[in-house]
Image 1 (spheres, rainbow, N blue to C red):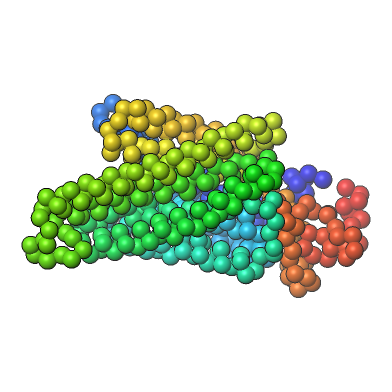
Image 2: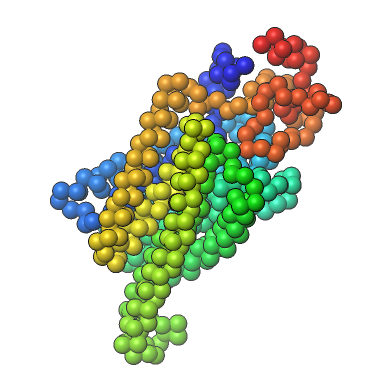
Length: 445
């Protein structure tokens, strides 16, 4: 029986229970795209001033979506706590929780992008940064450690690109630190240095974790068949990790170079212990190190752009739109944003053209996913149905039986088991005991 038919007659509260953390990929994709318009490779003035205005509208839309989706997700877990337990049991689904701090970070970047001239905005982003850091650590460290201790054994074929989502929040936090550094520096040198140190540590943790996961994922692609078609778009997520890392380290290099050029050194005294000419030469070297590391990580990201595009094209006949498609918009927007910032710093016309092309590509992807989401989600209603949740969302007594009758089990796949799939020995269906009436009903349907 189609899932949509199973949901007929459900109250709208039960339909909201189908809301998954993966919907936050819409928010983070919108926020990253607006940063592309802010960092557009060509100067934004006069004729193309409207690009910044479009970015501002996207930022407002992102804030509205973030608030709405946060409320829906909280309502879902408060009214149906058993679904929170089920999500935490499945590593791919729980990995999408990383989209929440990612979205929060892009909102912070938007604040400083449009209100950098206000002292209140500078201190506001400084305070919000620490909240974002805690949220990112909770996903990148807490969630991964929880999965190590609680999740069932994984097979090589279970590895998917979505695993990288657990590392991206720390990359975004580092990008946020790099973005707000120059403005916080105007208010307090000590606060700016604190941002630099913690942001670089977040970047270092993310690089270490992403390298491990991406290496395993690459081996999985070589040793086993490619992921299933619905998960294919997750192949782009390594692009997001490397691109955000490139953007962040370039920002850090520029700030540290400026900091040293102003007369500061690790063993600072007054006057500086080194001649000003030495400090200026050191700052130039650090600036170029940031550029070189940026290029290195973008080269890594380019490999995954080619790999992901090839995989999607090969699986194109089998693909059907779902929320996971937004997982390709965010990486491409991150990739475009990194190239935009690099091309502006190097003032290279070729790089500027490539960056503008990538911004256009990310924009077209965003428009495609937005139209498909509106059509399938709000017109057809198919995106609000999560297969396999029907048996979890029965009446209160059934939920109690579900929690007390047996332990929830994950079926080893990246989609919830279809309703009515029973274990031959125990007759257990989809996480709870199925009675005779339910079985007769399914057979009649």
